[in-house]
Length: 406
Image (cartoon, rainbow, N blue to C red):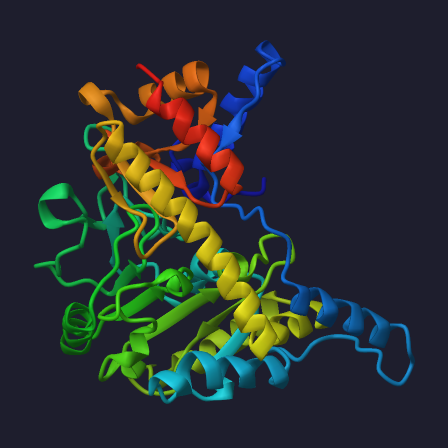
């Protein structure tokens, strides 16, 4: 009889956001008259920028004409988009990244989940706690996590890096050797960011120990701190030890159109084996390319109009973040983030568990957030709110929270 990948049975519970959706559906079925405000899942609410829509329409028109029709996209993505990414995101910041080191995809979630395909199951992964669930779950699926330990809520072979109030929610360099190190800045869920000096220490550690850093920079457009880095390749030697993931979802509102990219430098090697070549083979074999019209839309993000319009959208969400952060503090909550990221990380009152707070907030204030424990054991007693709602919904949600009693 056929056998399954037993590692899938080692996953704990349902995917975090699926569980949230299930709870909200159950509440709505029981209370159809109540209006729920969703500040949980980080989905954008503003429409695509006019420059992006214009590019989409133009690309669709091209697909209707024999001379300009496009079929399969090139494996790595169209050169016009990769060149725009290279020039705007890397060359402009002094990072020597070339076109053939940029791989166009359908988003950072896919790539951060799939990158483990090119690493041995014997590698030890270092993952922040709390953390975006995909990093951990994909390593469980790949057989890299070891046994689940119910008493700690952790896996035996994962090297956890606690991010707590005590260390300012910034992970500390592990004392044990890690092969794969997952970092995300600005961070999801805590909203924290990191300085170039601090990130350089991670790069130095990786180079010294033969580790690879898997750096998720999906929220770099939200950085306001001049000392924070926008790409890990601002750090010396990072092109020899780091892979970077980016997304158009939050900086340009592509959550429904799907576009992202991953950078794998050619200098990054395991002995004589190029990780760029391995990822190119994996990418070409298992991914069939992002649609031409979507890549043209991505190119438009880098136009002068596109940059101005998408910045206005980011500023809109950051205004929401400021409203949430200040509103929570005025209501007596301890809250973090919301300055360089669209996420606010608040401490639950009276030692409530994060799911208890979720239920109370849903049932009494009709506001949805994300329980911190869903991001890992260190997320317990914390709760994430996002700034991606409309300004009006954000204002109404904060009014409800100010009047809310657990």
